[in-house]
Image (cartoon, rainbow, N blue to C red; front, side):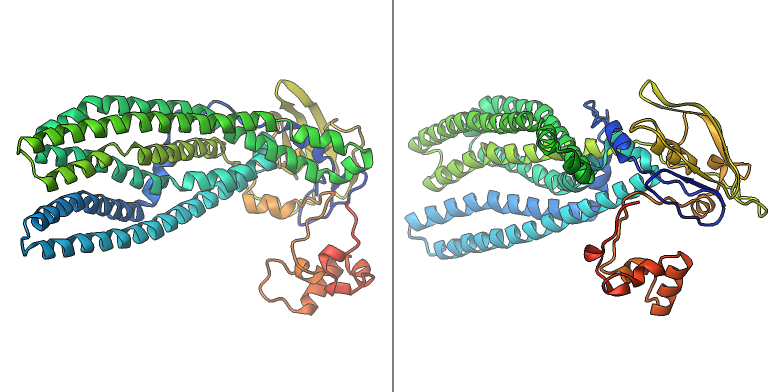
Length: 505
């Protein structure tokens, strides 16, 4: 049995090979450099998310289009009912009932759209989180070194939820585009002149929407990156809370964590200004178009070319055609989802850790060799050409100042990190060539801060085992030489983890 430890920690052994202990998390946290500001060139993840929710997205599009269709039919029905009421036609009652039915249908469709949209976003978010979590586990500790735990949590929780709204947002945006198009067509069916007047100003609305998408993308991306930086700093502070308290640096730590906050506030206000400016410009242009359509329809009414009911319908269609406010909201949502998907895509682009198919020799007993191992952080070598042999059954203590590479050496020895140059061998077999199960059965890491996930000590030992007997739990604790100190706890195996007086190491 071979053990590689650092002062203040202890190691456990499972199967062949070494147990590597990392007691210097500050080194890994210091290497977490935040996120890249250059987004991926494609929106493949966003497209995949929409395809994953294909059926629900199609159902949502159909419901949204049905709502748009009912909204387009309603002005015609109202206009027809008004014309019949003005002439005291007995058929007016039937048309009034048709209008009431359409309004009821719109209420039902709106409720269905809300439910289907919410469940679609929830399922897409859950799928994204499962995919990202699985990939991070496949990449291994390199993902933490690249992004940091806080930023990864921000992407997993916040960005996944934002990207998960993409299918529902795309469906709603398609329906929102169908409304103005259908309204212009309906205006043309009433009379070509009102439709022509509206189309003269339509390019201005299109330019407003294009400017919104362009200006929103930059500030939304930057806002999400700053959120990740704050989350990363907070995670580091929480992990090192005891060290911070002992050093009396709480004030400086708070200032460091919150340093990006002013910029976050600026980007947030910038987002609101961009969206508010687009909405204000649309609110200024849309009424002018509506007035132009109504003036044209009024002139046609004075000439007897349209009826009063058709004038009413034209006024409603002018409102629908100029309904840029809905488009502004949906487009802003799509911009946020797109920026969030790009942040997730950055993590998914990290290649997973590869494994071989070799097995350890049956006669092996844990001889660890490091041959010319070099590991760099950026351009700086932290480990430079390390040659090390730990004989089977030996124990090695690594001592050095913080940041010297002690934790990194332990991580390389257990293949939590692959060296940039050189090779690590266990019983003569390169770690890269080992089967995944073989590697993880042979090496166990015991970190300086235990993570007890169960409610009690007994729950923690039994974690992952289906209904183990108390005797089996106690036998496992005895095999690990933990039964002696567990018996000394206030309530033995029933002691709650939160109340257990356990130290790190």
